[in-house]
Image (cartoon, rainbow, N blue to C red; front, side, top):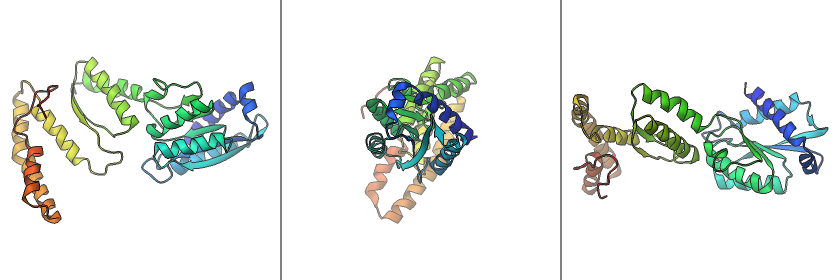
Length: 286
């Protein structure tokens, strides 16, 4: 399936390269394609070596040539860092005479590469990034986003959830371009359909333990209702009776292991159970 997807991208690339301007760019008589991907990080499983293998399969399907020119494949690992990805893309376009860059998982890296492709007037096809900004505010005539995007995800998922009664939202958003884009587009759909966004937190990408962020969402959901009903009151009682004591016990065990002492205990209480909760959308003066 993925190889077929790459083959279709290869057909699109061949059509793009077939223009007179593109022919002039194949100055070294080689069509060079760069797979810029994540080889060892969190995005390596759906992309990584699989993207490299699929690209080579697509080249083989084309007989190893396009427009009568041999196709060469090179690989780069951007390590999920926009500066590294941008540096590789710039070197490929300027020095290695790469004609097309593909893959580039993680929207922050993809946007950095698209910016360079636009600057160099070189081709770029991203099929592992979902931020709608690729064809929105950063749209480029030299780039193609071959994938669903955050706008379609929001319109399909958030719209359906709100209409089925899920009208209160709290976002735990990965802190990079894709997460920001999805939160923005989904929030727009939620509010447009009469729902409420209670808040959001943004843990770093690939944070292994999200329990503290989930707890913040629970606090927001339970204590940010203007007119709580019976279910809200019951939920607050359950939270205060069971969840908080367990949370405090976990903090005590961790503090004992770290030897942090009494001062840390005081600091934690303020986070676990604020004395006063401001109404949604209003500042509490903090």
